[in-house]
Amino acid sequence: MDAPEPKPSGTVVVLRDAPHLEVLLLQRCPRDGKEGAWVFPGGKLERIDRVPGASDSDRARRAAVREAQEEAGLLLESDALVEIARWITPPVSPKRFDTWFFATAIEPDTEIQVDGDEMCGHGWQRPSDALAAHHAGERRLAPPTFVTVTWLDAFQQASQALETLPDRKPLPFRPRIQRIEEGACILYPGDAGYESDDHDAPGARHRLWTLKSGWRYERDD
Image 1 (tube, one colour):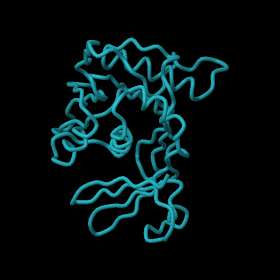
Image 2 (cartoon, one colour; image 1 turned 90 degrees about the vertical axis):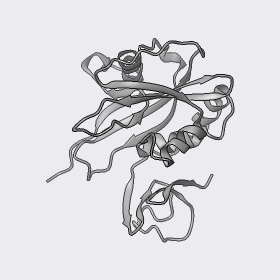
Image 3 (cartoon, helix red, strand yellow; image 1 turned 180 degrees about the vertical axis):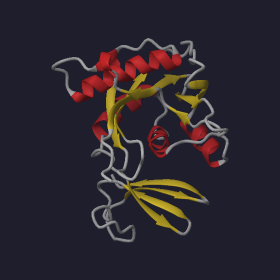
């Protein structure tokens, strides 16, 4: 059976300074008795986002703005969003998405109102605290969220992140998952083992280790 085509999507990483950089995470409502993951606002393109003549990234930007309003009650300016990444779900996944990641900053006292349908909670956290909560099993982050929060952990202010991340934007993330005894090694374009599916290949590193002992992101600049 052929892999399903990925659905175009948009996600926005919302930042604030309070007084140091914090990132907004929303918790998905429980499904099938399982606690929902913590994610950034976002979702797939709808008919209203498909403006004739617009580029795919601009349509994804519209979707990110719309989803931020629907899921978190945020009114964002489309022009204030900067593109920082693009994630494409692997062919082995039953549901696939081609998601543009954007980032923006808002005032520290902006009110967040989750919709109560898709999202049941929210929290502002410093990136280091969000990573610590993930490692402690308190807040489950998906790989794209974990990698993005790891990037953010290098900055003290939102302005620094918004100025730097667009220039560091890597090739689109097309994960290749290598199962190992301790968990998995997820290879990304730019890793020496990506084309050969060999996580032991010597050379450059761009990967995420999702191990029983903890997760770790590696990227050679």
